Length: 450
Image (cartoon, rainbow, N blue to C red; front, side, top):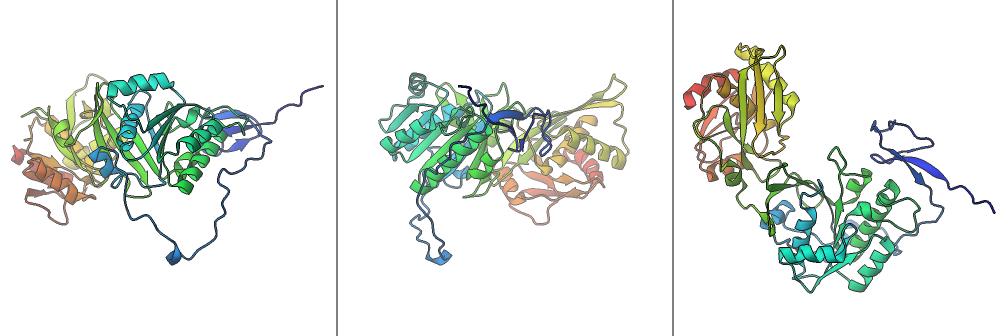
């Protein structure tokens, strides 16, 4: 008997759009080489949760949750999450391979197992491999259960038998369901499994942490719906060659996003850095031109970091503009603004800008530190370590105020910064202020700061 041919469809791994034939570029999201062939399953997918919901008036909803949060065992991480995990919360954690996602989660699982039963599901490592790593980290908890499995139906049976309150899925790209014929990591598998995990967490009040792999561009692999489905998205970053790791909260339904926590990778696992500002400024050079302190923040946790610039005579027909840790396009704009409004010639100079420590900064307040560092290096004016700069620079040469100015100044006060250079509508704290309104003011102010 002739076997019937399976039905297939071509799906974009980035946006989930479907096409009848393959093409090199998705016409919906514009991604290249993201379209893969998937088998269409003829099996009807039944929901794991079969209870029916009925509409209720908002003031009649029974709220048994009183605001308690489950602590991770890391003070800064709890603060970044808004106080800890919320019952029923689904968290997506992503990061480069080898950055320490599994190491951090195993330690968090160990801390939480002191108060709740924990299940660590791994599709990438065997139970023996997890035990070896746990022994190195000093993790030996009787309420921490390990399951090395990739089949979703088997995992659900394991969850029913253990009845945990906290679950780690490492990683979702390695899991598959028998109800779908496509391979693990495909768009359909990731969408279906993430949906089942969310249904399970919400219905039973379980806290689930999903590890998501990243693609070669450094973004979370799989469909964008994965990030929409979960409650919290956490990005784990760290410069290559550096021992520290930065955990950023890019989405959080239970608190503000943009928060961060800093960790240091050691032989005993991840150790949180309680004072990141001291950590990043510990090796700042003294009496050196081109070095500026910048209070960086994306949320309520500011960190003092060092922005460096090097301006040197070029030997090339076209001068170089290189930036590490900031957008290179931003560097070109700031350079052009300085040339026009300060009447200086930078066309025969190479300009290099670096955020020390490998931190990636996407904060408009870094404009003023970059400009100050460039002028400091160009005119060889060393700036004291007791001064901090922050502010946005517009195309017309104005210096603008930025958000979280009060938090930035509080961190400056805490670290002993005596003077702040910025454009502030309101004064905070007990530091001395140097008001700037334009890039011309920067050029006039720098010589007076020495």
